[in-house]
Image (cartoon, rainbow, N blue to C red):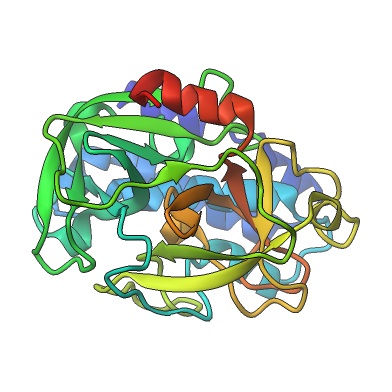
Length: 313
């Protein structure tokens, strides 16, 4: 766990937040980090999913760093509460290539799930780097062939995890990783990779097992939400992310808010039909006006070429 602890120690945003006067937010994140650092082994012994908690922590940190200095208590609560907002139960044809990333040491699928992913080849999964760079292949499994975390589907071992070489854990730039499975998931529809972005306003489908409401419980059944693609210019406005959206990211959601994905859905697909367009990455709060969900941009050549370089065309 030495490597995991070093990852947590890179948290300059917590110190910055404290200087800005957001002490409550800083203390909340420090408490979460401390809980993870103190005893991940104990958490595993107790059947707890420390991987889920850690992913939520690092996305919360990224969100805090991206927010303005004048945080309110409501802002802080939104940062720390994972959820998917404004969605409904996903059907069999909704992103059928969706998979769940599991903590191998936790036997129950519902308790073990900590991120989502996309089946790109029968034995390769595309997910987020922030779901991947703190685990080894022997610590995780991938759940395929189910819409529900109810014990159905097949848990598959992972033989290799490859992180984008330019992944930046501070800015979440190049937030993509590829997992190789030990056995092929045959008979399941696969996603293709976007080679160009659709027009602004195009409806894209995001799916995941993130919690449903502020502070709410996580669902057993996969959820979906339709989100319009937002221009990078709009997403980089001063009332949105103020220049933090790189060419390796894209945004989706409504100016008025109300629908979104968030931490609980990390690594999952944002797709147009069978075409993987984005990977759930980060975003300030959830479903807030002008603060859209941010996704890894699959059509960007450096992202797409990384995936195909590992998993093939």
